[in-house]
Image (cartoon, rainbow, N blue to C red; front, side, top):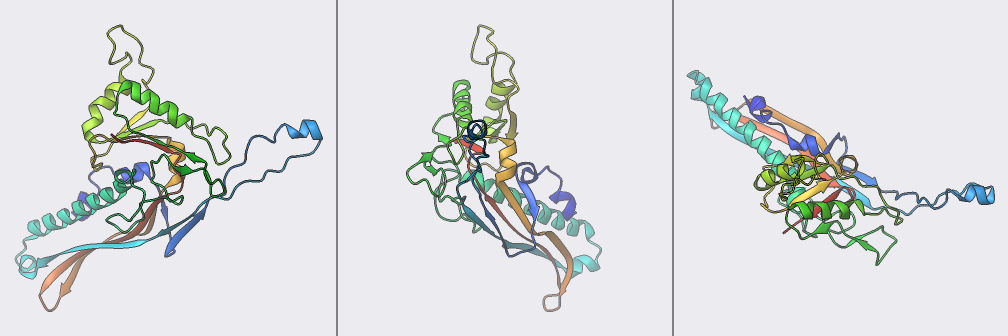
Length: 292
């Protein structure tokens, strides 16, 4: 019953995060920057290969956190074969575990415009560059003080604003200032914006025009609706390839369920669920956030 309720809905953790396993207390990654495109033509001119130098990236440390939840079952329920009640309680614990995992994962998006502090689960809100996930002041790399880039706008979800956000997202550059070739292909929204999002990206004709004009956004995005997004107005564009490289979930101990431990003092059976994980984002360029 626990496993059935835990897995009865499709998880967006597995849909949006690059889920990895870990056997350490924490995971560390170091960005190595990018290689610019300026030196390719030098060989024809000089007869020598231009060997690239690249800027150092940001170091990211993801420290795994323990999470556990339990409930107790009176022994007399077992003795009296009240297994229906017991299964119902186990199912409720499984449903709670699912909701907790989704809520924690959605926290990255719910705090996307916040630049400091820790969230309710003990994870740092800011990224390795010390800025909010969606910020107008992302330093381009650790060695480029004063050179900031933006992946956010204060606009509502409309046809015109979707086009604007897409263009802004596609204009993001890499560590060296070269165009990054971002291709946003996901539109991530709360339930309150689902109908608007579907109209904007699935209508073949312009949903705000009476002149049968084509809808240029048709087919460009997959709409991702997440019930655990807490703002009714914030929405996000994402490049799924860059997202998979940057948005990481580390499973140190996947969810475990222990159903039959008897406490000799209280004569109650204890059901305990336990897991240990961390989640983080390594780079901001995969997402463009719009908060209104």
